[in-house]
Image (tube, rainbow, N blue to C red; front, side, top):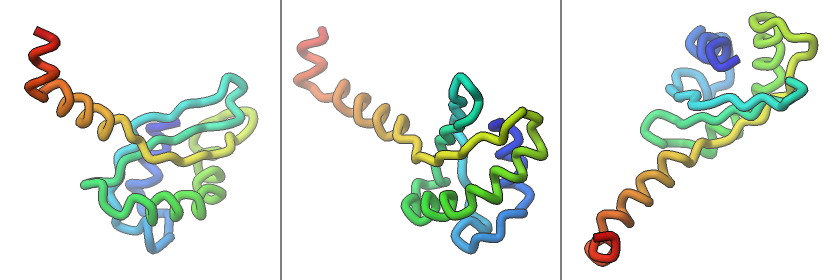
Length: 108
């Protein structure tokens, strides 16, 4: 599912002006056990314009769902739910905390 989505985004078939020419990384696609829902986690390149891109993905979700249904053969085309992937921000915050001199002292 992730590979098909990446190919669709690279093809410039999506004509939403907020998505046109926008570079995003699709970090993960989590499918529900019954394959009826797909949570798609993404990060915009440079982290810029994230709220506008998220809104654009939500607007384009029906079109994307239709194209993915053609690319990935499933019994039912899954509902798509787009979310910003915040794992990179969390990892950066944790790394900064671990580098704090007081925390390093307690760990040592």
